[in-house]
Length: 241
Image (tube, rainbow, N blue to C red):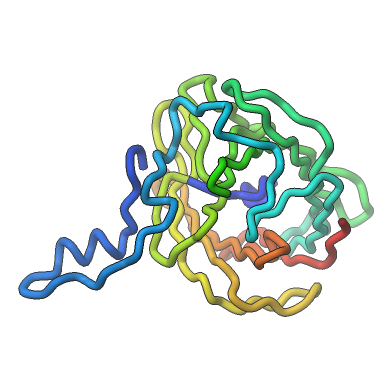
């Protein structure tokens, strides 16, 4: 099952500095670096070791990662000999993790004859500023915030900014996947339609030889595509609300 099918997302301990800004500060000899306006991510601690339950809600209406109960996204799985279709459904169930009430989001991968090959759950909550956080997943690589030195990480910022970089996954007391906002104005074509002003997030595992993948998010829709070189990808074909 693709990590991106857990709706990704999200994601350097302490205040986060955009990689582009850090580079400018290091290399700006003789001239001031270009000013980058702050967004909500600059004041976030990602991952968050001690989330305050009062800061979170299960009502998730982030523009790029809306998770309203009853919504189902259907994707065509590309580059796979076994899987044909994948679905993501926001259930009406909740689960309390690290003291925070979270929404249960279910992901299923189906074979070419419609048989379910894999089912996993992810757990999300939104903070008072509109940022969406992931608190855990099930499956072979599953984790839960507050257990085995895992911590909640950012799934989608309220105001994603080109160049923002952060820990996408923090398990076993260490960053296991890193993310960077690659674009905020991309155009993406899927069987479901064309999307403009798409946010592209590139994620890479920290293990040697890990291949990056890019997840694309459309405003008001959510995840519309996952592009993974030489591996399984996703393309949105339907949304039911």
